[in-house]
Length: 184
Image (cartoon, rainbow, N blue to C red):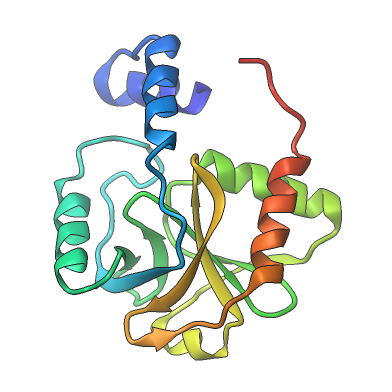
């Protein structure tokens, strides 16, 4: 909530009341997809990626185009050809031994931060590395996460099929549930 409040103040000069934001989040949580998802790989870099904001008509357009092309959503490639994030998701990959966070300019989501912290506490390996479309065939899994969920499986990005990775998804969910609850 603090991240959203401070970003709103920076971008709009004010923030919505916390109870209004929480009510909208509760409503949105009931509409989350289960996966596995197929993601189109599209070139796109968000303006001010470190700030969560709504001024992103491109994301909506790219999501609609991806769905029209038979995908569930879109994953973004930056100008260097590296995966960064997806329309409303952080991307995360699995190399078979460690969690791989894409090296790119992204919005570091609260769930991403929580999961990273708890993966460290659980002693589970993780690293930040560039991930390109050419790297996908060597990976052992992929997922997306946001405030709705610590992990929804991704079975395809672009034309590359990705293996099911139940242990990877279980690891993300275990890390998420290891976080001590915070006061509302």
